[in-house]
Image (cartoon, rainbow, N blue to C red; front, side, top):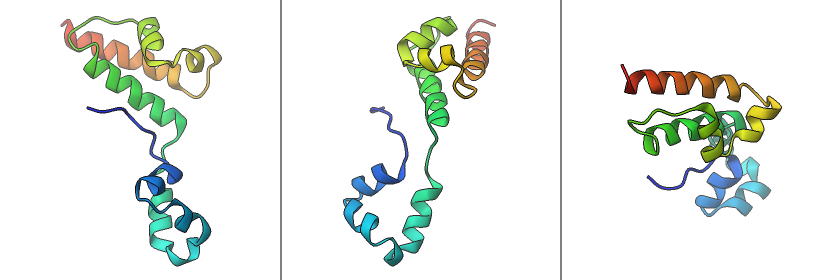
Length: 103
């Protein structure tokens, strides 16, 4: 598994090699533009995906704590400041992860 990237309109258009064309001439590519907007991933969704990925890859068959996930995954600031629902989501994922590994 490679590095995780956030799905966003600019990133996908850069990967396609057509950022400038899509930026300047959106009217020529209505279906493409509509699709690229439909695959946008919010910051909160991306953080959840990162946490899930870390639990599956780095902490497979290990007991883990919320603070350890926050430190490794870089979501500590989001949890501390209460941005989105990432704090509750991380707690739920950790409980599920620990329950599956140690039943």
